[in-house]
Length: 185
Image 1 (cartoon, rainbow, N blue to C red):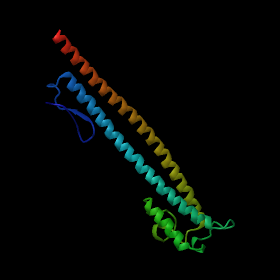
Image 2 (tube, rainbow, N blue to C red; image 1 turned 135 degrees about the horizontal axis):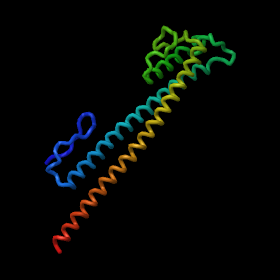
Image 3 (tube, rainbow, N blue to C red; image 1 turned 90 degrees about the vertical axis):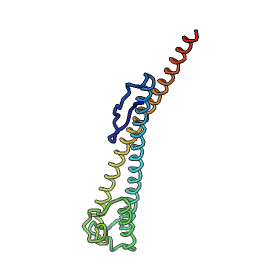
Image 4 (cartoon, rainbow, N blue to C red; image 1 turned 90 degrees about the horizontal axis):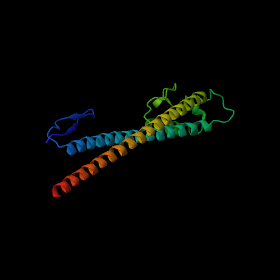
């Protein structure tokens, strides 16, 4: 018996439905559509989860950077260095660890220290980095919202495809019952 198959690109390919009865062929098409949409939905949900995880890690980095920035006094100048702060080494390690957890290898700050963040970083550089990081988080949030809309759209398509498949099964059953009734009459 022939049927439908899904190739590596996720598109349906027709093998041979010429030997199938109408109901079986329609069922194969609907079933394949449901399966394809379900696969797309699962992939999109994984993407949304990955983006949520990334945003959480970026927010942890923002918290660590804000913690360092809050240690500068209100009268601190933009050229004040992180190494002038109490517990500077610990604070730098926290920021570097949070950056590494977020997948950021180099924070782009002029510093010879691991990950581009160390005692030589100035308050002005740190403030600029914090603003850049907030922009990245906002951008990730906007992208995450778009992905959530795609998930909703795929979910609607999945529900519609499943309903169409169910209706097809129901109509096929009704058609078969009608044929049997006519044969018995």
